[in-house]
Image (tube, rainbow, N blue to C red):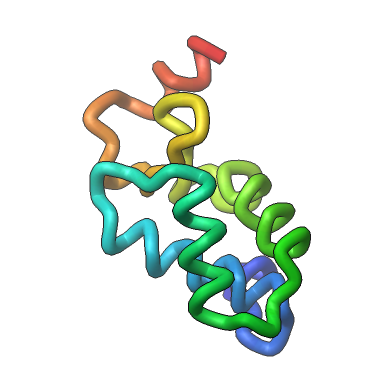
Length: 90
């Protein structure tokens, strides 16, 4: 099991919810919308914790999540451009 997806930890729950939401949005989702949806799903989560987890999604899940453009998060499997090309642009 990925250490960033432990359901017993707060960050694990946030990461799991973020990945679930990204799965529902193949075209990707804006950072602010992703934060809002996670906060709505569990109002006990602190907004800054959610922000930190979402911001680190591409680093914690490099083979799963990428940012095709500024402020957009998307699952790699739905990317229309190879992820390596995105990294070269950055």
